Image (cartoon, rainbow, N blue to C red; front, side, top):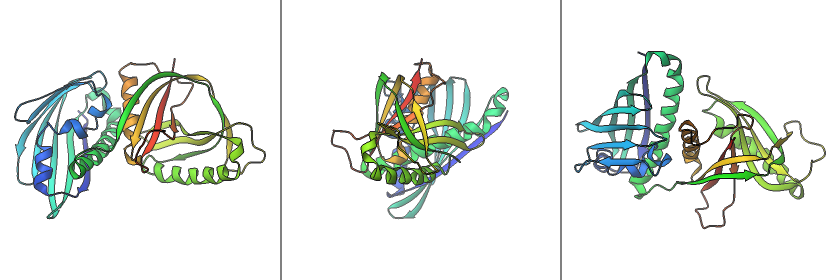
Length: 307
């Protein structure tokens, strides 16, 4: 049986006692769980003492997790997945005091895959690692501020009219995509400043390929145009997004939690809530919103073309 191991850490500005109180009581997990945010309507049951949780959903599957052992600097959990396939895992939180009001929290998981899924080992570790990263960021926010400053809106299916665009196509590692993409959009912003009359209000990223095993992503950052510009710099390309039907999840919150939207729409596809049109790559649109939001929030619509 292929063994898998994931470990992620974060520093939280709170005492170890406060951190332990929250992570050992499943009544708190609904607020910061990187999985429950993907499916608000999932059924969740927590025992009276807060030491066991059961969940059941279309997107996140079903299973149960319970506190197996509580030590001074460590909490151990037994994890049982029932759907989409049955398996067991051991998860742990290691709690390390840095100062009186600062804690280093490490979240790990030991598990195995069915033998016939050996080829998914690297992909599963990376995907779960990304879930842990999202979860720890939301847990930090919840512990420090009593709430998570990010949420999702499920907008359903709509018609997209399509657009012409200028863009920059790039390939990089999944680890570096934020930094590389920021540099690309700085170039696009400079172009927009000089050519504002040619542009629409659509800023977006087209994700052509995610390869978790090879740690690679291929994407195009783009801006919609009303008409084709004249001479373009060598980095720029011209392209078209065709008219299509879109399934959309909206993320509102800090950039580092925008993965919540991606995870949600991928979970919806896996749950067969829609069938993806493979001819059109997933697109993330960045939008202004007329409602009052934190100026540091990213407002993005993660769109998947549907048949």
